[in-house]
Image (cartoon, rainbow, N blue to C red):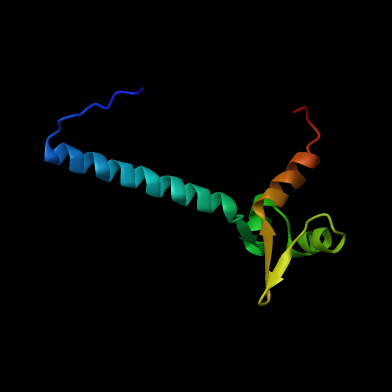
Length: 94
């Protein structure tokens, strides 16, 4: 049977410990939420990353090379799709 132990601690230290635990808990919660929400990029951001003109990016959309979504007239791309496009077309050894 596990023995219960009593730890004596000054109140200020206990408050600090509780504050630290709350901060860690909030950080973990934020990181979990960030992983659940995919990173979306707008057209201008994708053009900068891939160094493309409007017409070249439009071609990638039209031929299905680069998936996208359109919300309220704005086109969005998943960061993961951009990274996969780069990786899949890399000619060097990985």
